[in-house]
Image 1 (cartoon, helix red, strand yellow):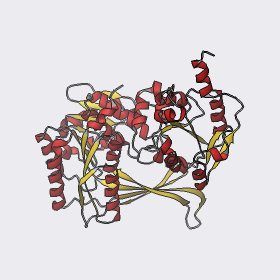
Image 2 (cartoon, helix red, strand yellow):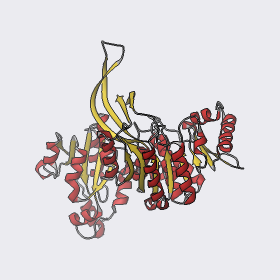
Image 3 (cartoon, helix red, strand yellow):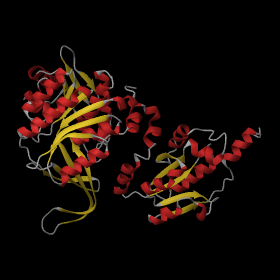
Image 4 (cartoon, rainbow, N blue to C red):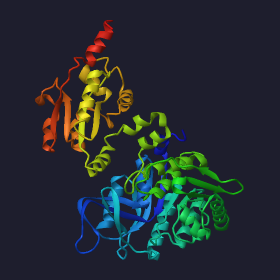
Length: 483
C-alpha cells in the first residue's frame, strides 16, 4: 500500500540516543500486604529488553534494516548486557562508550495479570563527560556518510547535550543526511536544524506554552514550534487521535489512528521514530511515511511493554484483505517471542502438524477437536520441499503460501507455521506444546516428536477421525478422472 517492506533491508540507519535496560518482572497478585495497603506481587518470570534508543533499534532490526548505534553505558553487568543484546541482533556497537563513572539506565516494570503495577528507575541525568562526547562525535563523523537517515532518541539522560547535538546536526548537514529527533524536555531550541521533530501532544504543549485542547490550539502550538525552533518539519503524535504533520507554507497534514485496544503506550514513540525514518530512507514520500509510522504505532500499543513491529504485522495492517493470513502466519524466528507472551497469559498450547495439501473434511474435524483441548491452536505445515519428499513427484498441489492463506481463514486456527521436516524437533523445542495432536490413523509410537513433547511435560492426543478420506486419495481420483 504505502511501501515495499523488503526495501527496508537495503537501508542503513544511524541511531544516536539514550540506551537503557528494560527489565520486566511478571507475576500474580492474590493478596494485600499486611505491612501496608499495597499489593503483593508473586514473581513468576523475568526478562530483559532493549529500552530507549535500544527499542528504536529493535524496531529497525525487526524490519530487516542495518543499524549502527551510538550511546553510553556503565562499565557494569547491565552495560555489557545491552552490548551483548545489540550484538545478538547484528547491530554495530562500536559507537557505544563504556563510562565507569556512569550507571547504565535501567527501568524495572512490574506487571501482574497483564497490568502495569509499578516502575522503578535507576539512572543519572548528568551530562556526559567531554571524553565521551569526543568519542561519540568521532564515531558519528566516521559512520554518517554510510547512513541513509540519522535518528535521534532523546530520553533526557545526559547524552544528547547541546554540544553533541550541534556536532551531529553539522555532520548531517555536511553529508546531506536527514535527521529525525524524538525530543525530551521543555527547551526544543537544542534541536534547531534537525529535519523532523516528533514530540507527542503533551510535550508540544509544554514546549510551546500553549494548552492543547482542540485542533485550533494544536495548530497554534505546532506552528509556533515550527517557526521558533528552525525546523523543516514537525510531527506531533496525538495518541488515539493520530498524528499531525506541520510544514512551512502549507496546511497541516492529519492522519487518524485506527481504533485499537490500547494495553501499553510505552515505546510507541520509539516505533514512530524508527518506522518514520525507515520509510523515508526507503524512498517513501513524507506523507506516506507518516501514515506508515501511524500504523506501526497502532500495532505496538496493543502489546504489553516496549515492543517492536514485525514484517508480518506491518503487512497485515497495510493489506487488511490479507490480514488474517499475514497476522496468523508466524516464522520460526518470530515464535519465541510469541510463545513467551502466550505462556505469560497461562495459555494452554496445542500443536498439530502435517502437509495439509488439499484441505478436506477430516482435517477440519482434526482442527476442531484439537482446539477444544487447549486455548491456542498452532498448525505447523511442511514446506514445499518437505511435501515433495514425503508425498512424491507432483506434490504439493497447493504451495505453502496458499496453504497458509487457506488455514488462516479458519477461525479455529490461531497461528500457522511453515517448517521443513528436519526442523520438527526445533519447532517442538520452541513451542513446548502442552498437547501434540494427530489423527487416529496414527499410533502414539508413530507420532514423530512424541518423546520430545513428553520430555517438556506435554503429551500426544490422537483425534478420532470418522471421515475416511485423504488428500492423496482425492488427488489420485482427480488424476484418474474419478471425480
